[in-house]
Length: 288
Image (cartoon, rainbow, N blue to C red):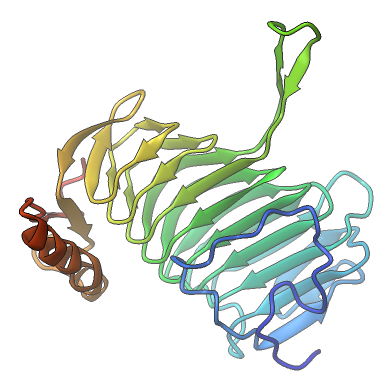
């Protein structure tokens, strides 16, 4: 066991090919790691099951000295060979099942504290995933390789949601003089306090602004403005100046904090400029 660290990854910046992760909306950028383990072999690490073949410079860190919480967490190094330079940091997870499947070297994963975290995460090589504090996932598939996914704090992700920034295959462009493989890294970003409805899919280089609502079964492949409702395939904006709360008949504390820090500030700015920015609140009981 090592002493607490505030750096991520742990000992050195060995993950050269992973894109820099934006931590501004996650609440994780200044958190210290309370407990760290060097992963040298399969085994049980503070209740977290690690299997497969960890390679050089692989670490597992916990943000809470109380451990991982009641969630079941497994980390599997898949493919039958060693993967190097892997950094996984987890907050306290009160409930759920988390499966992190490491498919290659140069991987960073950081998941903040949560009341519920049900996620299946195939990741790597050359990939980064960050999920902010107080975000909940009912049953979510998150895939990333050769790119990054950042999900802000206090998001509510419903069941059967697919968040995919992985390059499973590649398109070959035949329009040029020579065939060209289109395999640029993908950067997918979800802002803070975002509600993603049941069965929705976020793919490619999409970006969802803070406070937004993504409707049931929507397919998002582009940019969704903050504090809007988007539905359909492809997703389109049908309402503006709205946000949401987890409590059907009240504004929960996290939503209130978001409104005070973002919506009211935007309203004051709009008032000065002479435009309208009034925000309406939609409750969890009215699933879009």
